[in-house]
Image 1 (cartoon, rainbow, N blue to C red):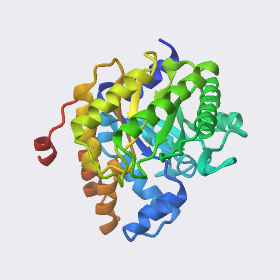
Image 2 (cartoon, rainbow, N blue to C red):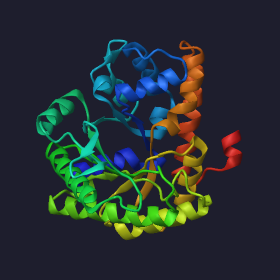
Image 3 (cartoon, rainbow, N blue to C red):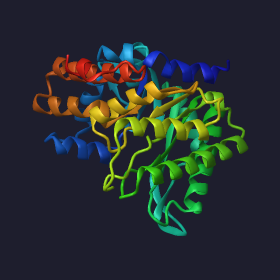
Length: 335
């Protein structure tokens, strides 16, 4: 086992998952304002620190993805990465600089952030980051994703991953096929498969050690505007089959994004995926809203009620860790 493989397994093993707390200031501002809270630097820090010091951090959360603002902040005279590490979790950092219009295909996006990345990775490593994240986004329509978008984003993800491993950190590779649109689950299956296969072709070409990465894909779901919905068992079967055929066996684990799913949907679908998982891949979660939303709503009513907020977050983290082991049920959810 390599050092990077050990780190990846430390993040994902025993039902542990990843807390995605890497919302940009703009995104976090929208989330806070949606519940009537002013988006100040202190309020953003207070909410995140509340989650990072919750009991479930040590039992359920293997890693936390941070945003540049947060990794540089301190609370109670302790740096945020130190607070996370003391909980037995690993600090990580989002390193892409966002999805911009793709030249040559103006309705699609290319993720930027490779310029100066080697130097930024050294700084983040010194700040305590042990893994990183980069997200490529793909839309489904009759014309998209185009070959240009698939190849361009896969290449960027691979260049990123190679630089991250050079800096002795684990790269999370996140190719997200968006739920936006009226496409079918079959369309999502085919496009997700195409995107993931292209990503791994590029990762191999760029000599990335596949045993030292984490894949963060979408589940196979119909579009949010699709006329035909599918039940959770179908989501699970299609998702497992897609990944079984697209992901090389060397990859240690897969941590799903929640996308546009509700908290319960994200938990239930993860649970079913693990019941149908016939691969050797660890299949767990890397959730943002699906871990935080209920806690955020509760906290917004009284910013000083740390214990109550943590109780709600602890429940969600525990439910997802059970789901990552195929042990969740609707009865346990209501306890």
